[in-house]
Image (cartoon, rainbow, N blue to C red; front, side, top):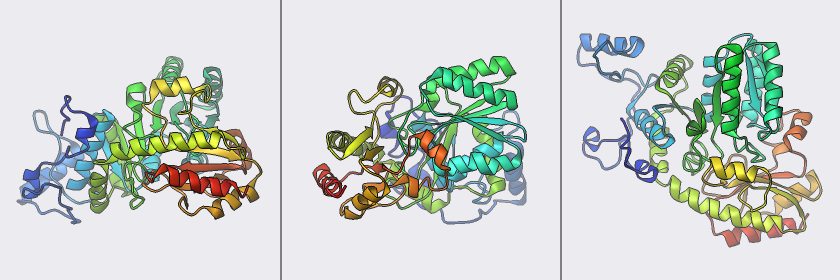
Length: 417
């Protein structure tokens, strides 16, 4: 379903992809809790499978009737139409989890001997998938830690090219857990330079989880695929797991084909929950970002805090101008460092009453964690250090509570440092 180009994203998230005529007139979409779908006839069954596996013949409409929910289902169609619309993409694919989306992209495009270049840090699951799992299939990983330094990125690309074809560049911006950013347009330019050297352009994938579709549009900056853990801000209530990928019709079609074989699509109930959540995404984004700005300013001025990595603060660093150019806000998840190390961090965490100690991010509630001992525990210490993560680092995902209560809670915790 094509999006009306005259409509704003805030409007598209409320209803796009669903026609009440297909839901017995219900204002909101029903949940299609079925594993299989009934054919009108034996010939229709054959045509459905031909359309799904072979694609339409010349002059035949694209798409096929639903067959089996692993292949696709009505609620998933709605989520994919809505995600594509707000990401500004031709198409989108929904997955059972964010990491399912990551895994499918990597498995679809990397062959033995290929190289992948990625920014550092990245989400721990992505880091392990690229560096440990894909290496068992013969793919080699290279990384760069300064996403604003074109020279450093090109040097890392040169190292990869000496080892084999550079098939993919994976960016996470802002990065998990530090909120460091990568200049996406700069890397897109470097990808074109690499294309002239090796005869094909590496696929440029951007993980947009930390900002989401209302704050950043990677496809407009030169990315080929935009990956989002929809568990986070798109879901927004810490009650579901889901992943989404948007991009060109051809790239998304290949991912959906592999998704069928891997068996990792988004289920109907999760898709229905996401449709609910997407309607309020822009409201939650606005409130959480406003809260985050106030909390970041409080932390910056606190004597027990040594640094705050939040590019929404004026004068916050060299990435501020890049963030202003490529995003519509700094988001509401960021890291900060306190005086001391693990012991001091744990005392702060154990004092908090309003803010919840938990992994994940992007929910309506404010969450905090100690990345070195939780989300990034399996990552080697030298890679964590290179990423800017140490024992004094805390990651804060700011929610939509009253900001005064959140600041008071952090103040009590910092008293214990």
